[in-house]
Length: 403
Image 1 (cartoon, rainbow, N blue to C red):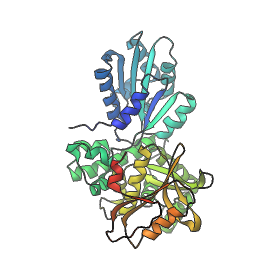
Image 2: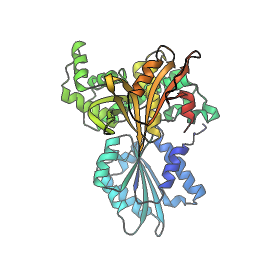
Image 3: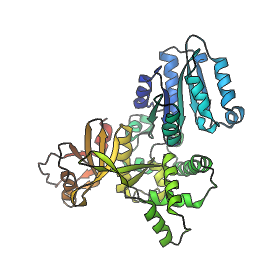
Image 4: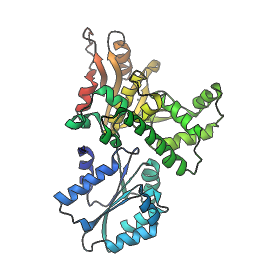
């Protein structure tokens, strides 16, 4: 199998090499976190000439590792085998499977006698980005790993893909060995979804597997890009004579689903204060293939929302804080992308024509500031007459290639 080198993330990790942080890779299951760490280990060996004796790797998805170690025996083994008077590189995948794992991390990080550079990966974003950060205040650095991008696939000759197929199957790394096997890809995506629900939601929160969780995931995925609240989920379930779930339980489920990275939540943006409004939220899928495993593998099902989800994932990969916005007369802007002092407004549409051009630009023009405003589209009508309003228009495939 030809491996896709995740250069964007490797460059970020290399800048953090030997820096006094625990590097934390989070993201949806099977997005390629472990592959990136393996690529980084190869760089350590080949370019920095780090000895194999200085590199320790543990995969706690592996039953043998899970049954063999607790936090103390893991710590003791690493310290016993470590090389003195140099840096030892520790790689721990899904370490949350080890009870009290944070004790291992704190002990290694605070070691006075041996130098450790620590890298961990896991699919539960809250556990690593919030809970661990609280225990190790100022000593963790999170890197959120998105699935393999459309551009990354097309820069590798083996995996050339058109936009239509990418919108259906997404970019989970687990699909690469079966890239040309349609049925197998579909079954694999459904298995990843099931695996995530079981391990990252039910086991993590000590729940029995429940159809209720799947109902909420299904509702959320079928309403990508729309405002979702516990109230409208509850009303939907009641109107469809489903099992009654309380608003409190729905809120918990939504939070846990988001923590697993199956869903990503974005807030509404206040153009005046340039801050978020906490009362409203939209949700997007953590991967387009996982989205298809719920709403179907037919491109005709919600193509516009798939495009919107694609742009969301790419903006997140590029390191933007992402919001949505409703301005004057409730003219809605799909995304407000914020990074440092930069703000960019985005509208996404499948086809830009005389029929929808005015609607798309009036949303952007409803914001009275000088920040960049962009329309991303899959197709531009050749007869469309553009107005001189400063709004930039890009084809989605061109924009995806322009990093």
